[in-house]
Length: 245
Image 1 (cartoon, rainbow, N blue to C red):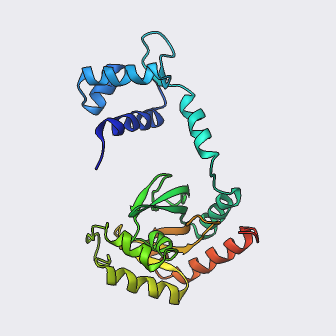
Image 2 (cartoon, one colour; image 1 turned 45 degrees about the vertical axis):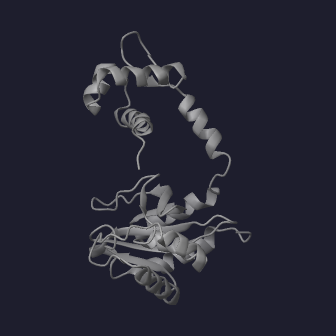
Image 3 (cartoon, rainbow, N blue to C red; image 1 turned 90 degrees about the vertical axis):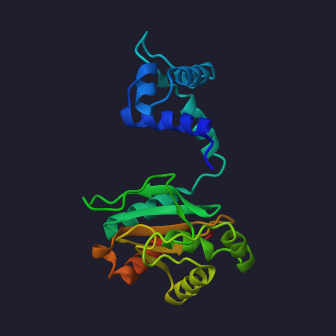
């Protein structure tokens, strides 16, 4: 369920991140097809809270640095270790594919850091990108870090949809794939969620945090090399990860 008012605030922030320039009330209302009155109320509220300002008179609204200050305060509480970014940067460079580190968010996995491939045809992903925890290599590498009781609680909340021909659409199917992942030493997916996309992931817990690292790209390029990608991932993890974990 999406709370529309909250979504509108985030959509405004994403709009400015894309356009990188001020926007008037009329421009924002027209872009989102919102009523002028509710757009005015939203912009006024954000301005009074210190999140928007007018850089020049009648030039439109633009976010203030308060967004950045608040984000820094939040991220400083439990940041990813510095070595994790170096890990996915090297993973992307060596495989030529998009690499990311993810964490669980209910029935979804969410990307906390991403390094995109430079290839013209690639997996497009960004920080905050969410994918089903049961239908992706990334998510299944997280599920492996749960007890069977914890997984059962998650399964009860999942809507088992057929995203692609190979999507596991039952608890038994997911559990079968998890057992296969343990046997092969890594998780993989072949269009399970995104058609023609192959993903290779391994569990990467840090302390009490459940995390996974994934490399993903078009099936025609890495579909036959999942074992090699997994070996590269493990080698780089051993290189970058401190002995303390």
